[in-house]
Amino acid sequence: MCAKQTSKPHNLRGGARLLAAFRNSKAGLRDIWISEEAFRLEVVIFILACPIAFCIGSGPGQVALLIGSLMAVLIIEILNSALEAIVDRIGPEQHELSRIAKDLGSAAVLLTALFPATAWGLIFLNFLGFIEV
Image (cartoon, rainbow, N blue to C red; front, side):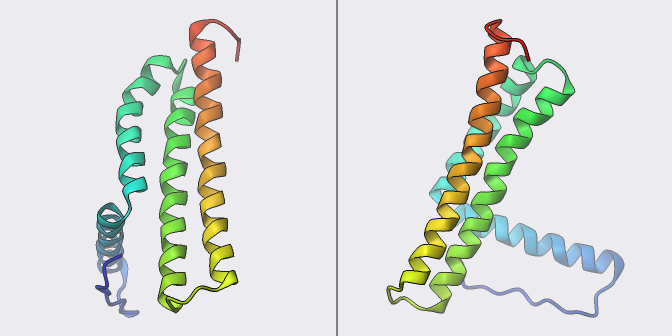
């Protein structure tokens, strides 16, 4: 992750606060894009899969489920990267608790990835006419 820190003045209100939050979020997305190959791959899958969701989903609910399930993977990947950054910030030495924290974050990404795999699989089988959902 980039070492640049953004200031967080607590006196901002209204539109200025929203603008500051947007800038911080944009910086976070830039940081994860630069530093995490897994995130870049997941974004490419997301971009390629979105049009397919409109083709195989039967109705807005299924399309939302297909796209939302992929978005969940991106969100959990961001949280996992944040967790890893915090652990790395604590110190470079090997520690069992650091390993556990990082492994738990990785497990969260894995389990979240099962969500789109299941949703896409079932909806695709429905699209092909093999099952009725």
